[in-house]
Amino acid sequence: MTSAKCIEKKPVTKVDPVAIDEKKGRQIGIMGGTFNPVHLAHLVAAEQAMTKLRLDEVWFIPDNIPPHKDAPLTSAKDRATMLDLATRNNPKFRVKLLELFRGGVSYTVDTLRYLKKKAPENNYYLIMGSDQVNSFHTWKEAPELAKMATLVGIRRPGYPQDPQYPMIWVDAPDIRLSSTYIRRSVATGTSIRYLVPDAVREYIEEKGLYRD
Image 1: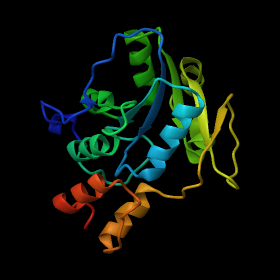
Image 2: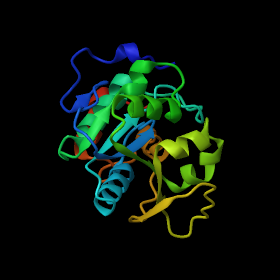
Image 3: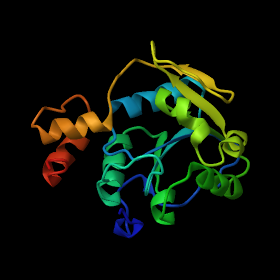
């Protein structure tokens, strides 16, 4: 079980553990997930949503314990560090460790409630891949969550999409890549160069992640 206690007291550059900026009325994209590890499809989707919807920033919020996945997680520290390495060259990408510090099972509705209470003047856009769009109705308090954030779906050509809530669609390059694929590739000795940022690939190699 992953614990938020393994996060360093002095996070690496650009990782902002729990602080919410006090600037008013911004347009903020939210990308959640385990990011185990973060890969180029995550970054491309975030960039496309940010530029096409004219968002001020996109916040990457890694899960502590995901409610819909059973795969063992790499430590919170490693996943947060890889996110930092992947996003630090984009001044509009931020890493927020709200769910890691809160602990327990990570429910997006709890995170949005916190954000709305902390900075109610901001408008939040929940960015989801096609698979998340189709399962969104199963999320905890989905109707309430849909009221707190604008739902944004990343459209995948040829992928059946059946949203049950109003959705803004963003077209993005069809990069069919998953964290599962990255982990399996590392475990079998297959190259992941160009599938993740170089800094993330080097971190995975240095730490010996996903080899078992």
